Length: 227
Image (cartoon, rainbow, N blue to C red; front, side, top):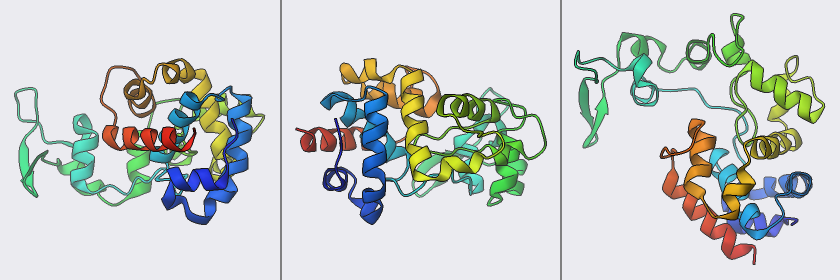
């Protein structure tokens, strides 16, 4: 199933003019990776739309506040309460984890955050790898090991040139590759949007992904357009 610029804008209106850049790349990638039925196409476009802020963000934003750090990675950045949980604070009438000293020190320092969060993980070994191999693409490929796997599949030297995944064509192809290797077509065939989002956002099934409701709204919009 091919996707037109007009269809993309109906599903992802915030994409604006860039929809015309992504439409041919999406059509090619979806054809290559068998994302060709209405259910598969709707699920794919909804997920990449959510992950990329409707095609407007191709590189991971790690400019976290201290509170953002404490509530995204609590095991690293939240103040422990000594009972296996975390000290709580109230912000805007919402109960949140209280940031620890490390979170306070890293707040707003995106490169340092990346190097702390991703150090020694996902094939990252050298100083600076966390920042160099931060999330890129429409479904953010993260970590040197995953960049290598993706590059091997796409015929790109992403280890030497990770910035390539910040380009629209490669950003799309990397997302379709991720979709394929994680067998997400099978979940799309049964409209299991929750677990598709869980795998993309958390790495495994059975969890509630970030923005679960928003992902479902985009999925319904895509179904309505792709008739």
